Image (cartoon, rainbow, N blue to C red; front, top):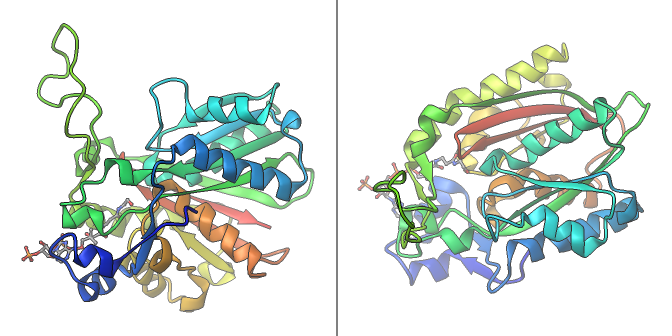
Length: 314
Ligand code: UT7
């Protein structure tokens, strides 16, 4: 995570907001900002650390997937920049655009490549520099989002653990609810050269997205539980996209969970889009919270709108 913190107190001096509103409505106390840092730089650092941690040489990678909604260029992709810098000579590389569902979508794609026998070693990275597309005069979004990166290595294995089942969906009819345009919105199909849009800022109809999560998140969680023939009380951890602590509370109540089973770190990082689930897993593992044999449900939801869940045994 970038070192630079943006606290609620700092935001109080920038827009008409206050710590009490932000904490009560979102659960966020501070977020990180990657000043003068490209998405690929965050991604590369996270990728290097994951490889070191896994004891894997970059030369052994078959595939690098970067989940991001804030790539540095149309092309080259963030994943190709990372592939080149890592010297992962035999790896295929592509970016995956699923915004806040980024990591969960990446997990499904990595699992599919491995199951199809097309890859043995995969590096999944999620990286965002959302601060580049946030309007810091818009209080409805600038208090929510933060920057960061997280990565994981996926390897083929004969063991009966790993990704047990997944459920991935999209609802593109609601795409306008969370939008960050790249090209002018007025007439995108007009002939001739296109001006680069001055208004690249992310806009979110927060309460509409909140309403969507109320059905989409339980739908995805119910689906993976059903597919694995398991019940919520058999799950050790629920690791959801950190969009709003109220969504996490909603899930705790709906499934009658012990709140300690629903991991929360939104207070320290805000909403980091596709990074959040991987960031939680990294923190949990380093804190010794993850033990072999445990079952984890991960769930992502957001821009697209996209949503999905996966059930993992570690
Ligand atoms: O990560 C991708 C997926 N994203 C999500 O899942 C986000 C889901 N949505 C949310 O988390 C919430 O909708 C938000 C946290 C974004 C907003 O919370 P809300 O409870 O839905 O607030 P609201 O947008 O309905 O606004 C309520 C009031 C409004 O004032 P009035 O019209 O009632 O007078 C807003 O102008 O709160 C006001 N408001 C603020 N006040 C102080 C909005 N932002 C702020 C702010 N500080 N930062």
